[in-house]
Image (cartoon, rainbow, N blue to C red):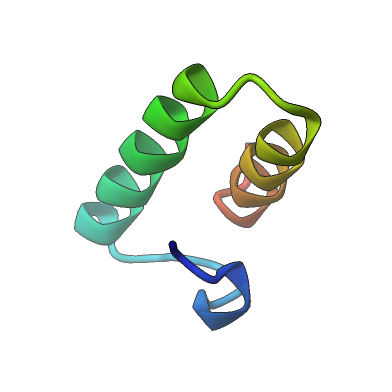
Length: 49
């Protein structure tokens, strides 16, 4: 499991940004629980969306 606390506040490099967006997108589709939605929203905020 990935710890969000280990991620930087902003991801500037496009390659890790793309990989992380894909990870959280897939995870949010597979885990339909409030915790996953919160994690995905937190990740989206880090990417400036």
